Image (cartoon, rainbow, N blue to C red; front, side, top):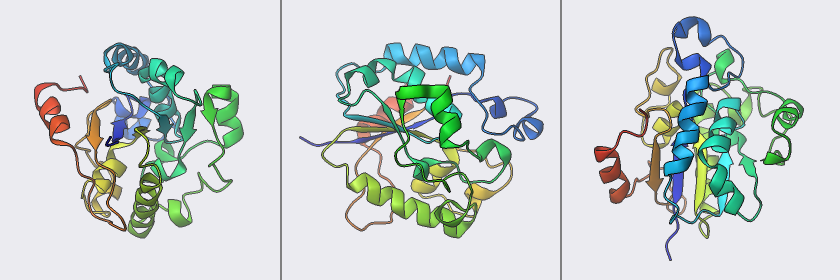
Length: 221
């Protein structure tokens, strides 16, 4: 049986609404009330026939909340019943809205719902692998693909961010760091992808059925 990666963009965050120039200065913003409601609605519509083994999210608050509300029923059916937080899935820039919180703060807010075992002390520093630079984005993309390849015996959901997902689908690393970058992903959009091929740094490949579904339905509305 073939397994897949389900990449999801977070729901509407506080930084996604006007005035966006001002709101992007919010540190690690949460979902808006509308974003929460739409994620809860999504939970009611995600196909029950899709078996998921692992639910993951960027450690940013909006991504964790999206995983919590969009996949509440799915998480309850996974072996660990938790959201695994992946620092490799964080957003690209070092604007306040794209800088995360400490693991202690995350645990205080989300408790046992989250697994913070992969969060080092440097995960939110925007340095090294996590740097807001083309080199950092490229390195992080490579490590993220490697991590995905290690999960090929599972069906995995990862909730993340539009700019980083765009990079994984072939966008230029410089472009996804640009101020005011507009992602091709709408809020809560999900794409079903094949696992990256061995040692490949090429773009992620979306399954044809997933493309057809998106052509019929706009998940982000």
